[in-house]
Structures are given as structure tokens and as C-alpha cells.
Image 1 (cartoon, rainbow, N blue to C red):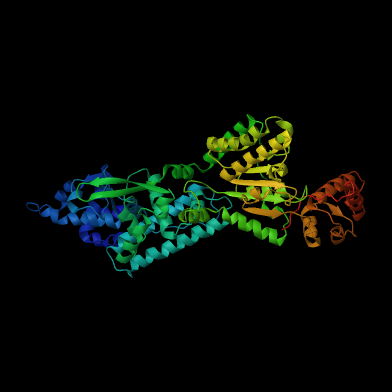
Image 2 (cartoon, helix red, strand yellow):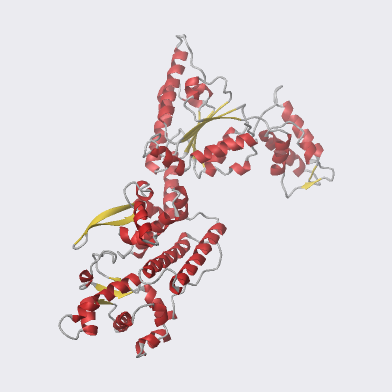
Length: 578
């Protein structure tokens, strides 16, 4: 505490070791020394009127001439206002401060402890949790606050401003590098990306978030203070007001909200804060996901319509035809929040509806349609509610029409109750999508047509991500075709893709014969699914041998059995192609 003692005992404040870091006047330093003594004596906060009288009362009301010093120290960040009804220093009058309670700021106390308030940067390591990430971001906001205060009292090219800018640049580089190394997604960073917030919008959001974590009503909530934080001159201040006005991205996306506060001298001001739902998501990043997952699990156990699937594979696990990959990547981009925002602005999409995409995967049985749907869900961080459409007639005989509607009603009910939107997967949806019977009076055809009409109606109203799989696109009713955004074909892999599939599938830890030729293995016209079956059967054969070594002959035997088991047709499994 040598810096503290030196500041208190040195008769010439200007010669104290911490004075050079304060960049304030001598009278302002005298006020800081007074507050420091009060703090040591057990009085962390002081009434401005009493302070001024003790320090500057000579005759009558001359102490009032020193009142602007209090506002200046607040603007520099060395003291804070302790009033319950806080008014920003940018709009407060000097007289409003007269009966307010003030205290030394954290920045000033750090100078007293360490001799300066330079930021010590952490090592460039991955963030362990969101609190460690927020600590860095809040330090960043402290520096922007300091810059804002300095810009009001010193020239733009002063050494103090340049020093803060250098520290700020270092910590921003540090945050960026640490995020690159961090595998777990930080909630706040994902919010920035999802809403495509600019740097200034991010800073405003972080400043308000810092207030929430501080648990106090400090100086970062009103419009002028927030705008000053991200503005470097008066022109920018005028321009940046649009960041917090009606229709701005931050307010329109419901990330922040505001209350209107009546000030005795300044009229009505706006006090901004983080929206409650967003705040809870940030403060309890794992709790919300866990609760939703548990609740959905429990609800699924109570019904017999859907199978709940947690996808294990990603799009990197599926070998794709280049054109198919391009279409699917384009599709995934359409579910981005930035795209939704534009659609809402253009009036193409309702403001409150979420991510929508209705897709058909078509191709012969077993060509990987389901695997790809699950992989897409994994990429979008969604769970899957799967329904086997082939069971709609056999399982619900006599009530098919009613239960077609129940698929979608149950899905919507589950979404509402869990506040989540899993991907809806309709497997083997051929009978729903095929052309309707015309001119037939049979009861079976009437029921089938009625069932399809209900399905068509539900597809039209559906909100969310739906993937339907079917065998043949040629037989699809045009009315259904128009309701789906994408129709993607799945077929068998070519030689190059089969080679890639074998390289992915063959176990690395296995032992192979010297003449083993993976290129020769890829010449067999198998689908990805057939390859998995062949590998499994071959592995069982090799595992029971005295010397468990894989040979091409072992694979040949399994391949021949697989092809013969296709009843005259080659089975087509596990791969898609555009």
C-alpha cells in the first residue's frame, strides 16, 4: 500500500507517485485525497455539499465555485455517484450534484493499490467458461469509458489517450485470439454473430451487460452516455444516436429495451437495459438448454407419435456430390438470423415467426436421406422429432385423417411447452406426397385424398424446419412440390466418392495385408450404406481368424453376398448426390 500512503502523506500532491496517472488538476487531486482519507476512516461515500464546505469554504458561498470539479472527476472516471436515482453526468447540472453522495471509483482505487491502472493481459489460452470471457469484455468496456472521459478533457492525440488506445487494441486482439482457440461457443459472442451486430452495437450491448452484472445502477444506461462511449466527435454522436432509437437493430431484435425516466432538471431521459430473456440466456447458458432437453425428453416419453433423436453425425461425416454439398450449404445459410431479418424487413416473413425451411430428400431407399437430415440438424444444433409416415395407415386404421393433423398439432404443442423448435423429420412420406386419385369413388381413395388434403394444409401453415424423405420425385403431386423450398436428389456415389467413403470407414487401428488395395475395393459399385454392411460382415469374419488381418478376399466375399442379397437389384444405401 505504499502508493496509498504516499498519496495521503505527501504534502505536495503533485509530487505523489500516482498523480501523474490521474491527469487532473491540483484542486481535483485535493478532492480525491479527501475522499481517500474518508475511506480509510470508514466512510466510503461522502455528500458533495459537506466535502466542498470542508475543503473550500472561505466566505459565504464561494465553495460553490468548485462544484464543477465534482462533475469533472466523475467524467474522468475517478469518482462515482451513489444516488439511488442516478442521472448521467452528460445531462446533469452542477447543482443536481450538490446533495448527491459520491465515492472513489474502482479505477482510482486500483491506482492507489498498484501505482497505475494499466491492464495486465491474460495469457492467450482458450476461455474456460463464459465468465472468463465476460471479464475480458468488461475490462474492454472500462477502457472505452476511460477514453470517453479523456476525450472530454484532453486533446485527441495526447499521450494519455494514445496509451489507453494501445492497451485497448491489445485486449481486443487478445479476446479475438482466445475466441479462436475456444471450442465451446460463448453465448454473448453467438448473439453478436446471430444478429450481425456491428462493433458499436456490440459495445453498447456489453456496456449494458456490465451494468447488469455489477448489480448497481451506475452510469452506463442512458442514451447520451452510451453514445459517447462509441463516438469520437460531435458528428459521430449525432450519427450514432440511430443505434438506440426506435427501429434500431438492438431494439428491433428485442436484445435491449428501455424505460423513460423523469429528471427534475433534464426532462425525460431513456434508461436502457438488456431484455430479460436475453439476460437469462447469458447468465445461465447451460441451464436453459438442459431444462429444455429434460422437458422434451419427458414429454416424448408420454406420447407414441415421435421418436426423439439426438444427432451424432455432422455434414462433415457425409460424403457429398459437390453440387449437393453446394445446395445444402446454401440451404443452411437460409436458416441464418440475418436472412430472417431481411425477409421481415421486406415484409416477406412475419415478424415473430422463426426459422423456416421445408425440404424434400428424394431417391431410392437407403441412399442416406435420413443420415443427411440428422447431420443437418446437428449442424444447426437442433434435436430431431422423427415420424415414420409408412405407419400412418397400419397404425391408425380408420383414423388416418385425424392423425395426420395430430402429427403437426403434437409437434407445435411440444415446441410451445419446451420453448424449442426441433427439426421435424417425416420419413417415407411417399403416400402423403404422391398424386391424388381423380374420379375414384372408392372409400380407400377418398380417405387417401382427404388425408393428403389435410397434410397439404398443415404443410402450408408449418413454421420451423421440416425434412420429408420420399423414394420417387416423379410421382409427387405438384401441389406438394410448390410447398417445399428445396428438392434434393440422392443417388449412389461415383468412384472418387466411394474411395473417400472407404477411407473414412476403414478402421485405422486394424491390420491390413501387404497387398491390400483400397483403390481396387472402391471399384465395386456399392452405396455408402452397403459399404457399412460389407465392412461390418468383413470385420466379424476377420475377428475370429487366428491372425486378424484384413485382406481383399475377405471383402470380396462380403461384397458378393451383399449384392446377391439384393434380389436381382443392387441395394442403394447411405449416399446422396445432386
